[in-house]
Length: 478
Image (cartoon, rainbow, N blue to C red; front, side):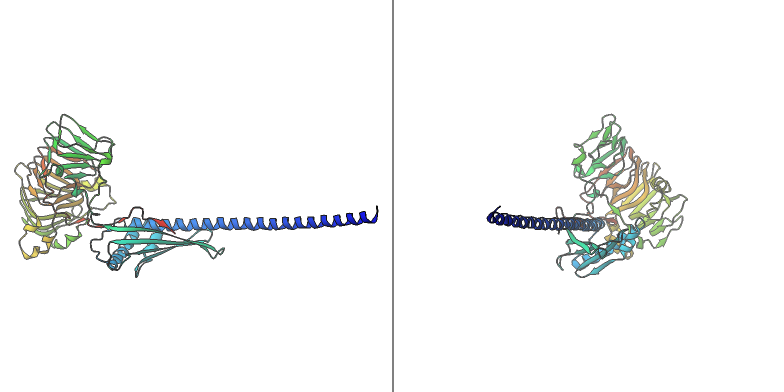
């Protein structure tokens, strides 16, 4: 090999080494890039998980507050400040009431503060591995003069000191005061029952001015029947059954004056809540056995049945629980009868057996009823404003027997069971509501006419009025 050839081969070997070094460098850089990329992807995935954890916490907090506020009455709210106070008081009471099922709610109820411009709730949760999450809920009206709109913001942070990684997410929704949020079945039906309704014999239900006023709602999913119309002479203005399990059953050829309303065509029923606390302060006089004039009287609890014969009742008659009270002979009532609800811890059957209000039973019983507005005397002045109710007795069974004709009932009647047997007839200004899944029976020559045209829109003792409701499609995330 000559010198020139040798020099050429030597140069080529140098180039190969250089190319090898270049490729080694490129591969090393690629390895570093892959490692860094993998680490970055892990970090991104971890952060996304943290973010989802935070968002889930925010959503849960949002749902908790929405649920707690969904039945909040806001009739006394006039601006943002009164709205915030009402929200604070309602949340504290609601969460405290549920604390028996969750000790955390007891602590949470104590963490609610009114911090202008709104209400703040801060929740801290610790997992078994020591990692913590916090949710801060801010509830406020957007304008100081606005008592009709509420924005709920849930800001959640998850992670923190343990590994130095955390994520913060927020969720929002809006609620608005709905003017008719407190509208109940009393506004739409003559008779509304959470249990089955039976009509037998010559029983009849009419509307005084509009046939629809006499419509009967039976909101039960009893598989046997929701409404049973058993005889040819039975006549009813209309029927509504929201659940299809039992439906309407007939025997003979009863008359339904309008087309039945069934299933999804029936608006979701809103059932009234009874609060008799507005009447209790008036019942200041003790009950005296044998007295024939009972003015603002409180009947003490007793397991011994009582019969009030030929009595005149003025103002408020407050019946403590348990009690079984029968009105017989000639009974004049100018005012309202309210009953103390029995403990809900007792079985409903036991409560109904121990708590009864019975009108009539004889062939010559007379029942005359007038509203609180007809009361005369200074001691009744403030009571006259509490109109629209005649009988409020949740947890009690109520019966109208025999020929107990009552002409006109100037107010609604609400109880946990109703029975009309014999020949009671009359007009009811305000309707009847059966609050429990018990059979409501109308049998014999019963004839009820419902007059909703002259009924009071918001009866005293019926909790309703405006309520907060969630604005559809207002949820958003950040």
